[in-house]
Image (cartoon, rainbow, N blue to C red; front, side):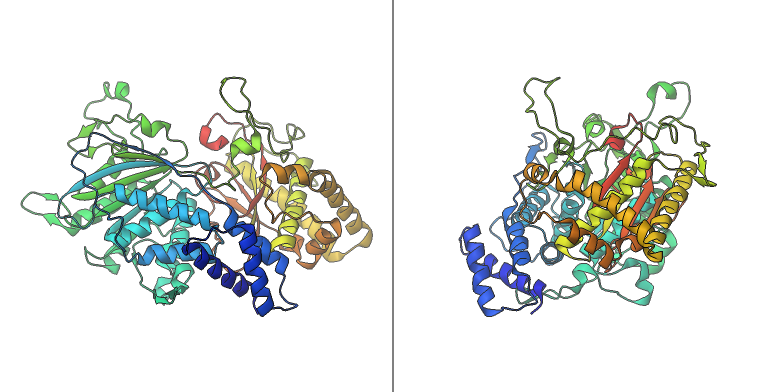
Length: 605
């Protein structure tokens, strides 16, 4: 019997008990597992691991979020009926995928269902014949599930009848491509980067039945794809075609050329020669603005404009987003961000005859709650009340190592043409960076000794924003990787033994000795099992972790995209600068090496 199938059978049994009103406690979980064990005993099954995974799934929870509603829009009529059973085709497939494929805890999934339903209830009714214009803002912590939330909102919106979904995915190709790939997996169900060869089903596309009911493949039209250059192109959209009432998704970056192409294409779909204006009617539009405080805000310099004649009172990106919204008679705009300050200071009454009203969240603001297993900046770095009296102090988790050996190699303040010092004609890197790479190897081994192989692992190196310096850094890191790989492959007993002894010292000093304190501070997750070094070194060797290590450079000059939807796992050391500070997800991130000096809040977060 397959271990994953056993977990699924136990989860299904517990779900039935929960739906019947039974509270799922540890004793109920143990009883259910013991009953299953009597029927499916096998030497191939790790029942202790099964128990830990099930306990994790049913133990974590999430609080409810906060909602601020406008008391000015009295025309809005609630339209979702709480007691009505809607079909929820896309939502149920997404929900099932998160539970079965991503292993989301049940209570966290329940909260996601509640908050996405709540957000949907605040958008315009897509089945109404009346025009509407709804604006909202969703606030969430860094890496706490904002993308998962708006993916759920999109699924529900499609289920209820929204026809055009535009996702504004940051300002860089990397983030746009990664967002598209994620939506391919979690909404579309097929790979958009190879659609010319037919539908290659992935993610939700492989889910055919839910609780015995048919939820077959129901492909949506995607006018963009996950390739690095897969952003919106008018020629591609025209070639694909599609009726105005056919649901379609566009994942575009916030670039004036791209947005202007989208605008012009939309204008051509329903152009009125009499009024000389496009007004797309009865085709509800949902715009999801990811990182809504970046590029979307109107930063027009009014003082500067006084010296220049005929200057429009809006910036390009801001104006184009507003123009796109303005040509639909039914539209909803929702901004998502972890740093909402600029959005809240938008002039709520600002309206332009050229581009319509601004993007102020005039109808609702929602704060997303964080799950009980969320570990963010507050818990990592701790907090003191030395500035605000009523702040509850919190000690940091002992996982941070301050480094000071880098200043002669790469000073905090340097220019774009800075040259790293050479060592044997190769750019030199700090010893602390070599240590961080060694820690990454240990972290992968710990994770795989607990969960097995098959998950992605990432390390972040963020030292400089200059491409030239990043390229040199790649050479230095690659040289160190080549050195330790050669040690293992050549298998010089003395040198390998010396290197592994160094890894053991790191493990004993910073992983093994701090285990109890770290486990306590992050909530005593029962899956955290203290491992002896013999098991760690065995995992490193048997899984060939060192040999599989690779480097990815993320800059505007490199068309290397971070792909995590492949079936095989990856061990990636990601080197980059500004592009890593805006929404790009590094899956399985366990080690970060950060030297960057910055005053920018988003980069720090």
